[in-house]
Each structure stands twice: as C-alpha cells, then as structure tokens.
Length: 543
Ligand code: ADP
Ligand code: ADP
Ligand code: MG
Ligand code: MG
Image 1 (tube, protein in one colour):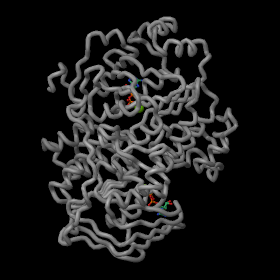
Image 2: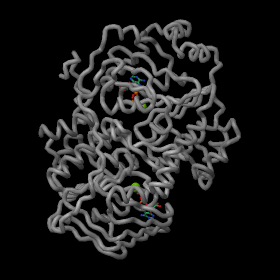
Image 3: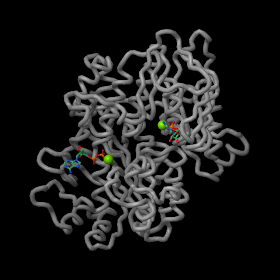
C-alpha cells in the first residue's frame, strides 16, 4: 500500500483508502443491508455551479437523486427511515440545512436531467410536444434552435439517436423554471461543439438564488461549466465519500494528482501526467503501416472526401470532428469493412487489425464475457492485461456474465479489453471513452500510449473528449464540413497544426494549467482568449 491507508481495495486504480471512524457519523444513505453506502453529500452554493467528479459506482448519481428529491436520504436506516426533521437536523450548520428545509416544505423547485436519457424513448411523444410540455419559461424554441433540434420537432422520441435524445433531455430540463438545476452526465453522445453549447446553456442558469449541479467525466467540459468542484471517492459499488468543495481549478488538479490535501486522502497512487507537446516526429518512411490515396465515398445523401495520408509504427492518431461528418465511415474503410468509391488503401502485408466499433449493438455474441474474450484472442490470465485493462475497467467481475445481459457501459468496457488485449499492428478505436469514468479514460489512454510505443503498432482513436485526445494523440486528423451532407478530412498532421485548425473553426482557445499541464478552455472574450486569437494566433499551444 501507499502507507497512508489501512484498507486494500479490489479496484487497483483507486487502490487504498483510510476510512476514518468518524465517517460513520456522516452516513447519508445506504440502499439496504450490505448495500452501497454514501458518506456526506456535495454541498451546493447558491449562485454558483458545482461540478461533481468521481469514478463510476461511487455515488454521484445517488447524490444527485438525493439533491433532486427523487431519493429521500435514510441516514443508513433503511428499515426505519428518518423523517424530514431528522434529515434537516443531520445537515445542521451547512447550506444543506436550508436546502432540505425548503425541499421538505415543497418550496424548492427542482429540475433534473437524469444520467440515462434512453429512458425517454418509452414516451410516445414527438420532440416538439416533449419540449413544449416541459417549457415553463417560454424558451423551448430558442433552446431548440441553439441545439439544432428544430428540424427534429416532428420526430418521435423513440426514433432519436443518443445525442439527439441527450439534447432534448437537456433542453427540457433547462426550460423549467426551477431553483435547482441538476444535470447528470450531460455530454454523453455529444460532439465537442454540442458539448460547449450545452455548457453555455448551463452556465446561463448560474444566477443569484439558483443552484446548479453537474456530474461530468469530460474534464474540459466540467472545468468550463463549474465554479466549484467536489470529488467523490471510495470503493465503487461498496461505498463513496464526498470530498470537500473546492474551487474548480484546485478541485480538478487535486483529482488529477489523486490526492485531497485538506483531508490527507490519497485515492490514487499516481497522478495523471500531462506533458507539454514534444516537437513533431519525423517518421522514417519504412515505418508506414497503412497509407491511402485521396478517398471519396458516398452513402445516401452523404459524401466524404479524405485527403491522402499515412500512419506509422509508434503513432497514435487522434480523430476529431462533429457527429455525422464521416469519422466512422473512414474508420470502416480503413478496417476494410466498406470500399471507397474512389481512392485506395494500402496496408503492409499480413498486417493485423483490431477494431472497436462505435455502436455496441454491432457485436453479436452468444456466450459469456470469458468466452468472448477468448474468442477475441485475449489472454485473460496475463498479469499485464489484468493489471492494465481488466482491473481498471472492472471486467474481472463480469467474466461469467452473458454478453447479451451486459449494460451499455459494461459492454463498452469488455469491447475495449477485447480490442486492446489482443495482438495487432493497427488498433482502430471508435469513441472508446463513451460510458467510461475519468479514471477509466486515463487507464485506457495509458494502455494505448504504452502499447503503441513499446510494440511499435499504430492506433487511431476517434474521440470527443479533447483532454483525453491531448493526453494520448501524437497527430490529428480533423474532419470538417456539413454534418449529414458533406465531410472533408485532413491527413494526419502534428497536434499543434491540427488543434489550431479544429479550434479555429469553433472559435475556441485552450491554455495549459501551469501545475498539471492539462488543457483548459479559455472563457470566450476573456483577455487570454483574445490574446491567443489576435496576437499569438495560437488557439491551442500555449503554456
Ligand atoms: P455513480 O453515479 O457514481 O456511477 P451511483 O450513484 O449510480 O454511482 O451508484 C452507486 C452504487 O449504488 C452502485 O454500486 C449502484 O449499484 C448502487 N445502487 C444504485 N441504486 C441502487 C438501488 N436502488 N439499490 C441498491 N443499490 C443501488
Ligand atoms: P460520424 O462517425 O462522424 O458521426 P458517420 O461516418 O457515422 O459519421 O456518418 C456520416 C454520415 O453518413 C451520417 O449522416 C450518416 O447518417 C450517413 N451514413 C452512414 N452510413 C450510411 C449508410 N449506410 N447509408 C446512408 N447514409 C449513411
Ligand atoms: Mg451515475
Ligand atoms: Mg461515428
């Protein structure tokens, strides 16, 4: 262990935690005997936005449900639950006391966007009707326009893609006239531009007298929307402890370092390390693994053009672009699943491909996870695969489950182990970070980096999480154009050039945090934003 701690977790990434005796007095909720326990609650502040950060299974959604009034906290007494007076007394002296007083008296109006937006599909409603019903501020049309939902208003909810449904759920939640806005993982399924628009809408709700609370795994988005941050740590599925509320920069840095100084808690043995960009690599020509000539492909109404390019041994290529712009189409062309109309793809002889598709439904396998991994040629007994992939992604406990019974998040984790755990020369990963928590995202990113460097393979990663792309990519392909109609892809270029191209389109600039080197979004119109755009002409590469 690390010396501070007394308890060994089965989850190695969050290795060991000391659970102080006095915590038992702060048990806020327990689902049942031997069930998950939540200690303390994130304390929101009026007029400020509070971001919540933590691994999957440590009680983030449980916290939001309690703050939303969907779940009444039982203070651990699931058999004889306390009444509101006791609950209010429990939170005496903190801002949660008046919060729950208002809730108990029915004077707190709450708007809540739950994590699982797929549940909206059960309503037999059209988008327009759904938005109108929710609207209490007469803003639904404006929100729909801003989020590009207007053209969908006659579609049934059950016909929508994940991203479209997410935007409807967010627009509905933000159109309520509430005192509290709670958003559980709002950026899932969204591309970067959509994430930022949603973030801007959430920021608009941060006003005197209002509470805004967000759970989010995309660190750039969380950083951008939050004024304050609270970390929840613990043993996933067993217990979660809510850390103190800090300012956003200190809170996220503390998460990256794996250490909460004020509480002397180390919840990860190592920090996540970002590096300033090394200079672009000159790749020797004999290291090319795959190359292509200018590619054209039409699919229905959609046409894609990809500039000629090549990928080398030891190269991690990040792929950025909005939804519906042809990223998956390109990856499928590289994987040999579809043929280009014009152009060619040339792979070195006997090259082995490993491909994780974006849509999990494409994987049909009857049998257990163990059998699936075996059939994917993953050696589940290898200590490296166990330590680097199976443990951080918590797949070891799923081995005897049937593939058909897995949830979306579980299936994603199994598919990542299958894709990265087998021997190949080229790894193609289409949106691998969806459904993963921050901890898992960086575990996956680390494996990708190590595998690519040590084994001299190539990896191509399509991903909307720009902090994760910054962490792992060496070169970038940028997809631009008109989503659903026309896509234009660049060849892989160095990060600085690629990010400048990509961010300029979005009129967005990034700076680096001086302590952790993580990228942070500059507030649009701020001094730094204008300086980078107008003087430096650097959207990205600034320390
Ligand atoms: P997070 O949002 O951080 O991923 P959740 O708050 O959803 O975590 O869940 C924390 C833990 O509580 C999980 O282990 C989950 O299985 C468990 N849990 C959630 N809801 C219930 C419930 N209704 N009954 C029993 N256990 C639950
Ligand atoms: P991305 O991965 O960038 O989100 P895709 O490559 O999946 O984009 O899709 C690009 C566009 O091509 C989308 O508008 C999609 O609807 C369309 N498309 C994809 N496959 C087909 C197909 N088989 N037939 C018709 N249109 C398709
Ligand atoms: Mg959750
Ligand atoms: Mg795609």
